[in-house]
Amino acid sequence: MLSFVFDTLTSDGRPVAVCVMCRSRDREIKETLKKLKNIEFGSYSSGYTVDYRLSSMLRELLEPFGGDIEVFGATVKAGKADCPTGGIIGRIGEGSESAAEGLFSSGGMTFYTAPGRFAFAIDGGIPGELTDKALEEGSAETIYSALTACGRDFVFIADGSGGGKGAAAVRGEIVMLSETEAKSGERTEFFGLKRIGIMGGTFDPVHYGHLIAAETVRDELSLDKVIFMPTGHTTYKKGRPSEGRHRYTMTALAAADNPAFLVSSMELAGKGYSYTADTVRKIRERCGRDTEIFFITGSDVVEYMSGWKDFSALTKMCSFAAVNRGGSHGGAALDRLSAAGADIKKIDIPDLEISSSMIRERIRNRKTVKYLLPESVEGYIRLHGLYTGGKAESALDTVLDKLI
Image (tube, rainbow, N blue to C red; front, side, top):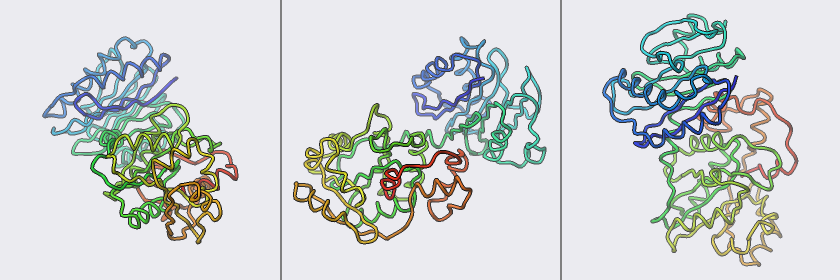
């Protein structure tokens, strides 16, 4: 059985997430769900009408796939209504379940609906982990984790009567409506800013070392904003990083408390390899002619910079902020770059021995990462089961991952 989660914004800005379990045609179903971007959800005043509207939208789109879809669920943030977050679950050609609490079986699957909290459909009987007490008291995150642990296929939705969290999930993948909504507010132009910094990196995961470096540079160079730029495909990273949506969301969660921090999905949205010169060029096109741009990099990366694509052109588009740990600013390599015309500011930051690779390793070994990264990021990692397995990284990966 195939399963996936799809999320987007309707034409009037309502975040919606759909989870689908199907026998085939999953790619065609995803393509069809993209039409949600062109549909207006509208305004509704009651939870019943919110769910009815959501059901009618999904059934109109998914009806042609009725023979392929085993079960589907959906949730939406509807706005100013008695039930601001709604949710439905069911089968094509049958009634959607959402309004009545209950446990029942249908077609070899077990359904459980708890209006205003969550609903799921799982292959086979109810998992032993989901006791009556757990179903009554458990949070959406707890129920999702228990469903994942059982090792069977499922679809899961959390709605939100009274303002609870909205989410849609299948085994191994969960999307929160708050994540979908956050992406819609991303700033894509930077006119009016006089001094901005760009901090690129895989941010896999983002940690306090990244945040301290960004804030220190912002303070030292009097920057208006620092733009965190999670990388897309890079030529130097031989290992495969986590999915871009995870790295973007973790970075957004980490940056949320600082009004001077922004997060951009520019590189993640692009195809092919990501190059610093291309990214800075795009940023330059989206800000004023007199805006000063500073590309923030670690001193341990300086010796590689002259080999970057279009490095000579890059030096004319921006300055560089070389942050160091332990008193090293790149030595002779930095002097050579300065002599070649690069404007490089040397910035001292606190010497914290934190790296993304070390955090991933600790998680793989089931060791605590508390106080190494924000609690919101730690919670996201735990919810999505990131970094729990995988191969060791190369020495080059580790060096480049030290700061950025």
